[in-house]
Amino acid sequence: MSTVIAVRGVESEKIVNGRRTKTVPFVGADREGEFASLGVGLIYPEEGKAVVWGLVMPHALIQSWRGMKILEQVGAVEHGTLCACWTIARRDMHDSDKHYIEDLAPQFGGIKKLNAVREHVLDLVPTAEELSAMITALREKNVNVDHWDLDAEVKAGRISSFPLIDTIGREEEEQRQAYQRKEEEIKKPLPREESLGAFFEDLNIANFIIGPAIGGYGMDWGHIKLEELDAIAKRDSFSEYITDGYHLEHTTEGPETLAADIAPGVRMYQTSFGEIENPWFIGADGTRFTFLFAKYRDGHFYLKTKVERGEAGSESEHTIAELREMIGPLPPKPAARQGFLGRVAAMFR
Image (cartoon, rainbow, N blue to C red; front, top):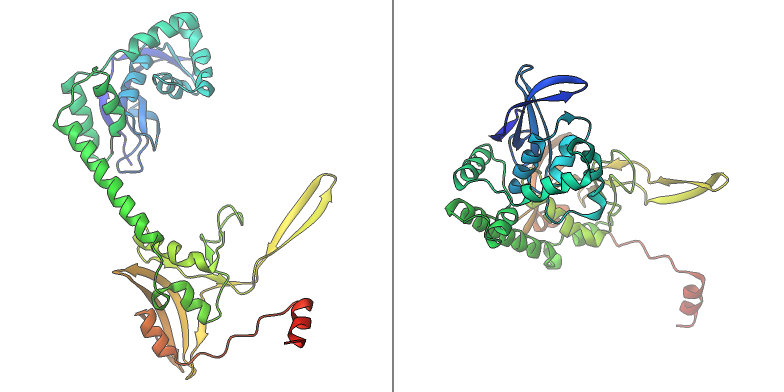
């Protein structure tokens, strides 16, 4: 993962870790690709390395450029300096971030002088050529640039729009519309015969989980309701990062959370749920069906299923309709448990 440099600033010597060091501020990203963090950085030419402070989102190019301009005037680089330069380069800075001005102020001779520098930098913009070159350099490495940051400067009259900015705006709108269509498809209820949740309800299988069952229960992973299964499986199916769709896993027992006081004012919670496994079902003819993944496409769920008949077994993909036919008649569902009042009422029916 190599650093992506959009534009270099003015070279100077700064005090870094107590030592005078040659540095070159820059605008760039910590890596290539859509998960890059875009912001401000420093190149250390004599050491052949670079450091970047940025965010995965937003990718505010103008703010990053202004942050570089502030960084050019900093004499000493300490922990948090790059973050502070980027943060105070935002015009509508949040109150919770104003401590960064106090952090940098001593290097500028006080808050009043730093605010004067900041106000000057906030009125600066890159030239059209420089801006176009920065956008092009980033996009060539698949690092996106947010349109709102550019559009705000266009509307304020500080920069003029040009085709590349218009392209970014059009692409963001197309992505927004595609996302909206995807969300509508995810939320749209399915006919019962196409519903993954209804299928497992008929098989009397529940206690499905979401997440890889690693880390803390309830934070990193947890149980989902059966009626949520369709939407969650659709969302995983539409993800470009999950190739197989929704991983079908459930627990052999329903989650039961117990609380115990372990010290004054300290309560410990522990959830038990049996074992985690792929759901399975024995068909009418004794065939065992183990359900591995569910992938939604073209209005249907396709379940990657391990089918075992005696010693023979194979994995293949089937629609819910095909699986219902392969499984055959289903046994009657267990009778629901009745409370005391329900049993009494049944006596008088």
